[in-house]
Image 1 (cartoon, rainbow, N blue to C red):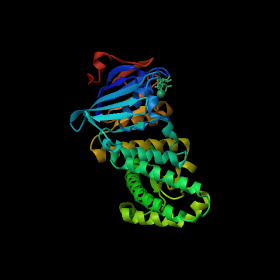
Image 2: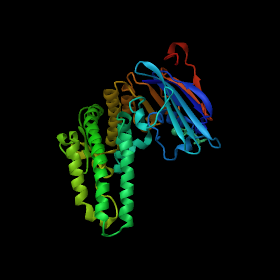
Image 3: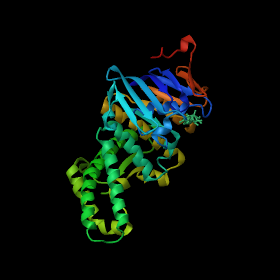
Image 4: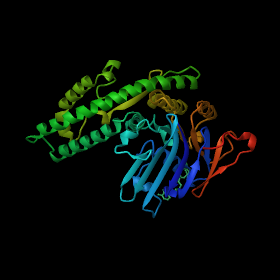
Length: 382
Ligand SMILES: Nc1ncnc2c1ncn2[C@@H]1O[C@H](COP(=O)(O)OP(=O)(O)OP(=O)(O)O)[C@@H](O)[C@H]1O
Ligand SMILES: [Mg+2]
């Protein structure tokens, strides 16, 4: 799939304008604080309505305005399609897919897919499990219609159970019975989330390992393992929802006295992690900076391949200022992996990029397509 044109209305500092992209590499460049990331974000938002920067949805609306709109014209499933997102300052929001309202975020899964790689992702190995869970959840939500809503319901139930545990510090009568009701819900939702994450990581491990082997010239082996409440279970378990549910409920029941003592929910996918191993050793604890960067790069390229396997089309690759963070060899590797994918890439300078890329200058929120010399023209636009 590829974006033909994005039309913006009061989106952050980008004002009201349309930008037509080409199906290949699109370089978005300009000085700091001009709107490069905002442009990428407007495209990303339609694949993942939660966005990638901290903050509330109304923060996307230009300061002083009451509403913002992003209209995307894109090619997917062999035809032109549209996605339109409207955000209002009173927190209302609407999404239209080909003019038809979308009721749940999940309905967007597989419709329009992006893979984002930004400097923050380079900490994916070093940081805590929350970042790795977020990486998995964003990737799976784009592919599985039910996943996002299961995740939201699960978080709500965990919050409600935590509230109950805090209010009733210590063993009070009736508490175990009330908790049992929440545990049933947690087991339903949690087993589904674990199953989806476990099977995603199994496929991701194979795809990322191939990239890591190439990046390390065959010297290192990457293995990605999902660490669930039930440890790092064998493959069979991640295909059996009922067995996962039974195990989760059992562990929740066992953890009851500890949860009452600590006043919080201690078991379930909200505490899971993804272990990244180079030659069997933790990349977080033993990997060098360079090895850790190769792991993240391999995960991101693996993510692209899983979209292609599941959806049958290439995602749009969004690279936000990430090239300058990579050394030459890794930059070269990223470029060689572009293939037929559409790439939107931001950078402060134009110099290091091929003349074949379509170039857009962003200045003070205005995006201007720069004409390449005739013989270098990569495409004619939309
Ligand atoms: N809701 C908003 N309304 C108006 N302007 C906003 C809004 N949100 C952010 N901005 C402004 O948009 C500007 C551009 O931000 P952006 O992150 O896109 O910059 P950038 O070109 O990617 O810069 P850098 O090279 O530093 O990453 C910032 O100066 C920011 O203050
Ligand atoms: Mg930026």
